Image (tube, rainbow, N blue to C red; front, side, top):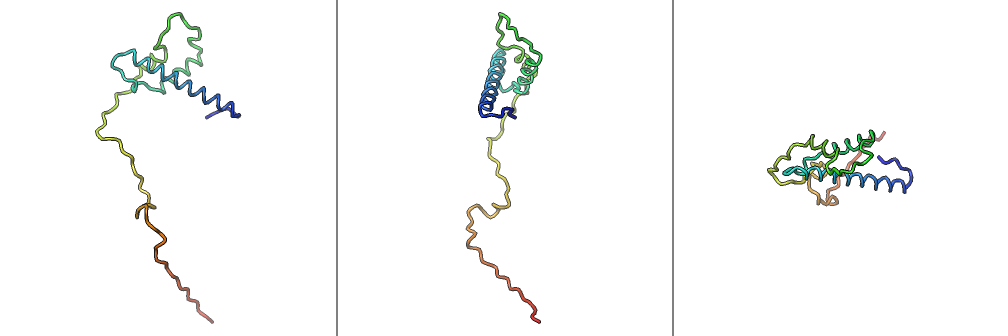
Length: 126
């Protein structure tokens, strides 16, 4: 949900969200690259986002040390909480079709050729 009320504010907020997303994905890639054989699909974006938000709320690590840690607190947190390995696909992915009752007779039926039904209304005259 965007909080800005002006077009410039919305633009700024969207750019900020995109930057945060890219920074977190970079941190996740750096952390998974630090351990050999670990794929980036095992890292949880939700864990990274929650940890980053906690770091901002607590103002932890505001003063940078002279040592640059590529993994950092965010990387350590989701390396401790890795997602399980993905299951191997047995079938290729397919698009599911919905069962619409309006398409039951086929999508290309010309409905103008239906026979008209006539109704005769009989009234009893006095």
